[in-house]
Image (cartoon, rainbow, N blue to C red; front, side, top):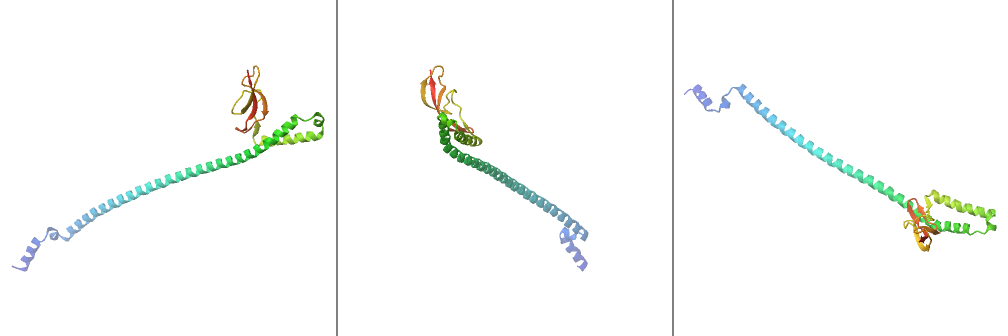
Length: 197
């Protein structure tokens, strides 16, 4: 057998891909590369989509936490301001409650002043002091509770006694001590006598 015959036989026994001309092998490699490139691109796009979804989920979670924290802060700020104003209001209540007996004493003195003293300038000055005290209390929102001639209201009046009074059933017929309110809050109820009959 000659060398040429041996070479032909060997070539026939080799796989088909090796028998192809050199140009045909490059087409197969390009096809394989294109297929693997498509798979890699698909894999990369899927991975990027997954990372994007995770980033969006995390961003939404951070946004919800931020909104919760903002709402908590606003509630805290509102509650703190409310507590502060309540503290200031309560501080003024304590002071006003201490001043009310002084105002009561002035009112009793004014009602029971003898006529010879009432005509003096000294007494006029004393009445101005009482008026100044009332003005200060008014500026702080303190007002007196109207009682005389009104229907008895346990929210504003404290009944000390009852007296027979025709046509005045359930009405306040005498005010023994003036009551006061601080805006809408009752500081001290009026001590009253209520009519029966």
